[in-house]
Image (cartoon, rainbow, N blue to C red):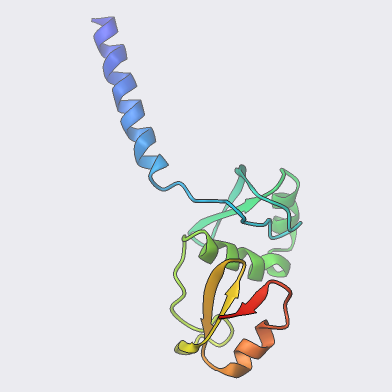
Length: 129
C-alpha cells in the first residue's frame, strides 16, 4: 500500500512539474537588466505579472533598490521572453504603426511614429527592419 501511495505521489509530482515546465521561458541571448550579462533562470524575481531574470544573486537586489532605473530593460526582457505582447507604442502608449518597426535585442518592436522610432534607434542594439 505504501508503494502504491508513493507511486501516485510521484506521478502527481511529475504531472504538476510538467505543467509548470510548459511555461518555461527561453533565455537564449537574454541580458540582465542590471549588468547586461547573460541571465540564469535561477536568478529571477516576480515583475509585472511575469519574471525578470538576472545574471547573479546580487543583481535582483540592485533592481529592487532602484527598479525605475532598470524598468525599460526589464520591460524589454518581458517582451523578448514572450511573457508580454506589445500592443501599444512603448513610449507614448498610442496605436502601433508597423512601418516604424526596428529590431531590439533580436525582437521586432514597432512605435506610433517615426519620432518615437528615432528616439530609440540611437541605442546600440537597434537595427532598422
